[in-house]
Amino acid sequence: MNVHASKIHLLGPWASPGSTSTASLPGASPTAIAFQLVATLEAYEQDALRLEGGGSDNALWAEVSAQMDRIQNYCAAFPSLNRPSTALFLRHEEWMHALRLASTSDSPEARHRLAAVHGAHAESLASLRNQCLQRLTRRVPDRPR
Image (cartoon, rainbow, N blue to C red; front, side, top):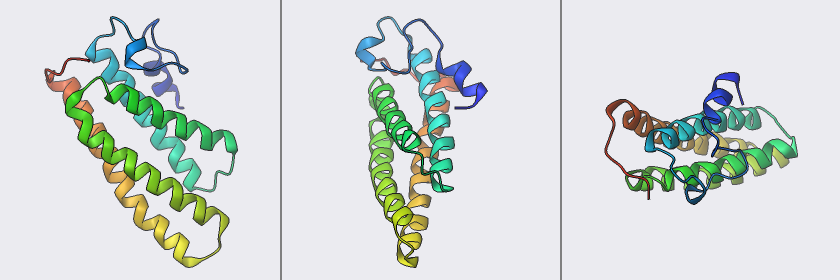
C-alpha cells in the first residue's frame, strides 16, 4: 500500500485493516466509508499490478484477496454500488483464475486469456472507483445500511 493510500486507509478509530464489516463501523459517516473504499481500491489496483508483473509471493496473493473482501464490505454500505461492486467481484474471480493459470503455465493461450481478462478487470475497477469518487465530490445521497 502506498503512503497516500495508507493515510486515507486509517481515517478513524473504527477503521482497522482486519475488520471492515459495515456492521463494525458504528457511527461511520458515508463520506468516511467512501474514502476508505477509494483507498482500498487504490491499494488493490497497485497490488494486482504487482501480481501480474510476476509477484509470486503468497502473502501478496492473500492480501489481494483480503482487499477484495474489504471492498465488498465497504460497498455493502451503499446500495447504489451493488452493481459495479458485483461486476468487479466477478471480474476479480476471473482475473485470479487466469493469473493462476498464466503463472503456472508457459502456454500462450494462458497469457492471451490473462490479457483479455485484464482489460475487463481494469474497466470494472475504474468504473467502481469513478462512481465512488462521484459520490464523494457530488455528495450523492446514499445512506449506509
